[in-house]
Length: 126
Image (cartoon, rainbow, N blue to C red; front, top):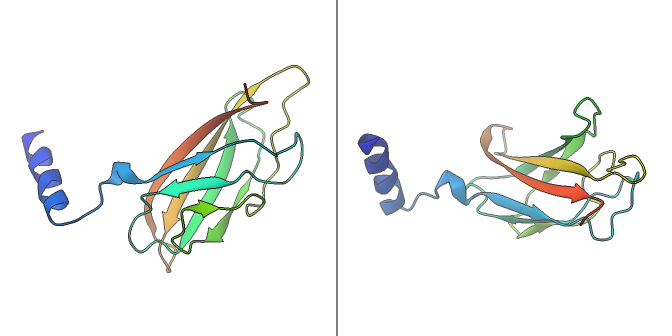
C-alpha cells in the first residue's frame, strides 16, 4: 500500500494526470424516449494522447437489451455534442424509470485504451 502511494505521488510530481481525473457527465434534457438522439456529454480529464472516445450504454434494469454505442473523434474540447453517438435510446416501459450507465473509453490514434470512466443517469429523469 505504501509503495503504491509513493508511486502515485511520484507520478503526480512528474506531471502525470491521475487516472481518477477522467470523468464524464450527461443529461437526458432534450432526449426523447425510444429515439436515437444521444445526450450531450461534458468530458474532463481525458488522458493525454486521447484521439477517440468509445461510448457504450447499458440499462441496469434490462441488462440483456443492447443499446449499442459508437466511437467519436476527440478534439480535446470539453464536450461531445448531443446526437454525436449512434445508439438505441432509452425506452423503459410506460410508468417505469430505468438506470442507464454509459461507459466511455479513451483511445489513442492506434485504438489502444488509455483509460475509461462511467456516467449514470435515470430515464425518465427525476
